[in-house]
Figure 1 (cartoon, rainbow, N blue to C red):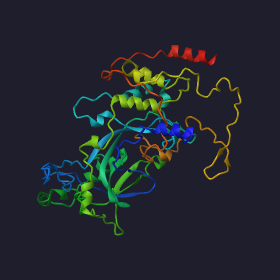
Figure 2: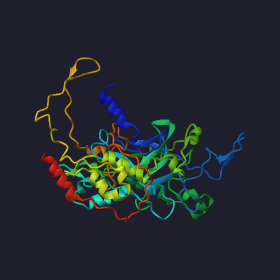
Figure 3: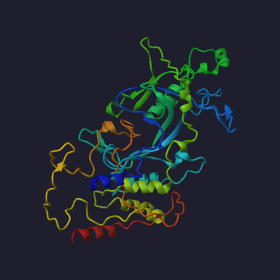
Length: 427
């Protein structure tokens, strides 16, 4: 194994760009083509069975309840999570961008947990030296060509689904904000909120589910087929929408879950920590060290921002910002024209000219990346395929005390830092 391969392998160890735990089958509900799918029902918490041998009691994996209760409340066939998407630099396929699940996703009480990501995004957006991290890069035609490195968090939804093009397995579907709105939001006339207009009070009293236009949205035998596709209301900036799938006669398609044993493959959405990666504040800061590893337009390394915001409490997790005045200067000893690298051989033999080094911040196709505001999910929500390693981080010798919003932090001395940068450039 060559040195480049060794470094690449070392860089990817322990780096996980997507939000789901290992072993969880998931599907990002996005893409160019429409997705035809069924949503599976919630487990019935009152349907408890006992194992004959161990005598252990557990919820029946084949049991289920309707998508709404008689009082009109939704059952737990879906869960909301809060995700900061495409965080970092470069394209999502070849850069260091990754997704972060915000701590409030897992909060059980009224007090909001400390959220390093939101605090960093807030501080960067209010400081002119770092506002480039929170601004979209637009081309001459006004279209977004690169999403912010520190994007605002989006409200997403997960649910157990069966993709009709891949009907032999159950997956956790990850739905964007606009897709969730078109399915569940009352203000957006979501499918799950639409009522039937031709039902009498007597009919509703006999079967409360007849009040809803689609009946039981999650019924394994008679539930409707749903279709997810990119909208057209905002052109290329349109988000994804969920709609009812219709047959040739414009009737709602129904599709039974078959085999019924697929119900036993559902994930317990009520136990989010068994499905989604829960990051501690320390984990979030360590990950930010890896994805924010470039220099600002003024020449300040981005680790200086992390030191500025988190240095008082979590400074031992953040490497010292490099003092070189910009990363593109030619190193001393090589002159202005270093020797050209030797040509590389291909696996099949023969020679190949050396690849030209990519710029540190390549542009991104707007069709592949989305945001909650404007184009909130225009493309692939999948994982980074070639993650880049973070700088080495020394583990703290003692556990840092909890940090709360509003806690004062040591101010980063930008003037002193720039003096060091300028002094280094004159050597």
